[in-house]
Length: 142
Image 1 (cartoon, helix red, strand yellow):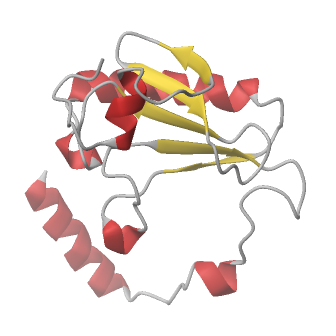
Image 2: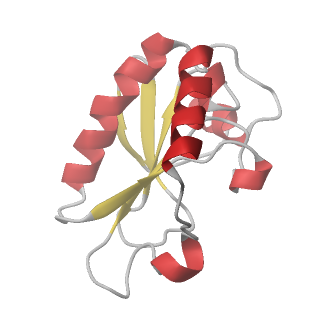
């Protein structure tokens, strides 16, 4: 059962047992299950047992619990390389409004999350002054 649960949330329904899943692992605050549309064999969703739409909404006690679970799941996939993906908000491609981490095995170049740095990670050179200003803005928000 999810704390702060939402009646319209797919992942809360999984936690309530209303929707079946293939549970891989569970703790007091976290739940891990196989993705039904896997990018690779072993693609797992790791979710908190607390309904929070974004990472910023999640209480720290759940976040402290979920990190070690993500590590355990990544190691349990049996591959040496993997991606851990977490999206916040529609613009960031979050499709289920409940915090979740994708653990995606990367067994080969063509399996798992397939992306190129040029297409999917548009980098641009930042000036040192701009980096310093951004750093100060972020520090001010901590």
